Image (cartoon, rainbow, N blue to C red):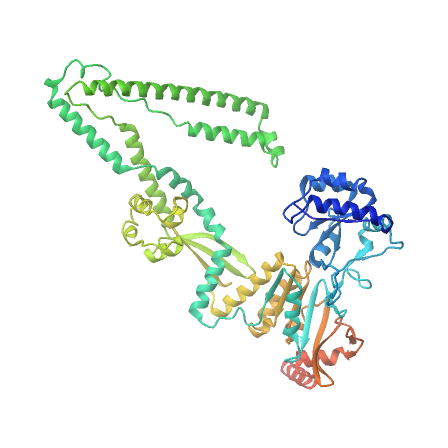
Length: 603
């Protein structure tokens, strides 16, 4: 399901109104929809309209419907400036258009700020289509192209790259960030002090859980093999096997002691006959699946054909399938014979007082024991202390370790279930016995038991290989938060210098912020020269609190970092250098004094 915008010429407004009425009748409720055939039936010649589907905007039109609309569309609607710029840069994507989604109505409080400018002469459907085919004629702003876009309804603009928001204390910087955050649905907002620890122990625990949640796939990948082993071993019941062997031996001894009681019924050949073992066919089925995967793979077809004759592989698949059918037919015959022999044995046993020797498959019993022994070896090897994964992340290392659980409490935490594990943990050193205890707990999902055998822990290490301190942990969290912002439409950061030292900001944060701003709008609030002056901003905004009569108001003075004068939307101006010095350096006098001090030390 997706949305599509249909725009008609003013001259056909009456016919268009009738068409829209037919659509409304066909879609009486929001959950209803019409198919392409009905859409085409209602609107007729689609070339007469400007058709703009939801493209990089939910709910988007995709797949077959988008292909059928392709001859009639020249643009696709996106829902953010980030996606607009991304589509403009990608030659494979449709020309993007960004709309406000505001519905014109009586009492509309303010005009929308999200819009698309088109360099077009005559405003006709034909001329608009022609312009939209050329991405160079479409932009986010009238004068600044795709470098700037309108943010607030007073005309205030923002860069599609990196914006630095400066200002003295209480000048409205955070107020402005909060306003921007309200304008967007998909915003990443890193607030001041949000990543700094207050309670060291609680913060460490929270941070580790944060990392573990993000890196959980590493644990799942490592434990996936164990999951497969568990699926096989869960159906093995050594205790039932032991009872079956015991019953067999006891009945065999009793039958020997009572040999004189044998009669014509107990002497019959089928009286002590054993069943045919029924083969599972799992190995053959898996082999056929593997061969089919080789034959049907498209992604690596070129490499496969260099080394494998696909014609021969198809013949192999056919022969294996025929063999599987043959074995399944044999298995069905064995099952039929087993059932028939079982019925006969039951009739003979009713008619004699001789002891019947219990049936047992000693080969299967021995095989089950070997599988359990191997299972124990695998689990104990996985429980041995060691590093599963280690990755360099912006100067830090994420280390994933494995080892045994230290107690029942750790197992309970991983299970996520409110139940006791004290009895099960008593058998933790015996993998099979431990498994049987877990299987006896009805509150546990069999599909998740593999998580309860090996403890997977996560550590953040500094560049020297030692576990990070509280401050280093906060630095890592900030870098991760910034890095992960790429899934959002805009990134807002409020005064990172309040929590971190200048060397870290200049070396790591500035570089990452600059990289992110190449793909999305970023706004950084700061009063620190390490960020504000050295990061290389695309756009500058200085916040000031000014008195307008008896009222105080927050104003923004925007411009490029090299502009001598910054001009607010209402036309008022301020000096860029003086305000930047006041915001970043505590004024010109303080800046000059520090400059002289540093020069004296250097000399």
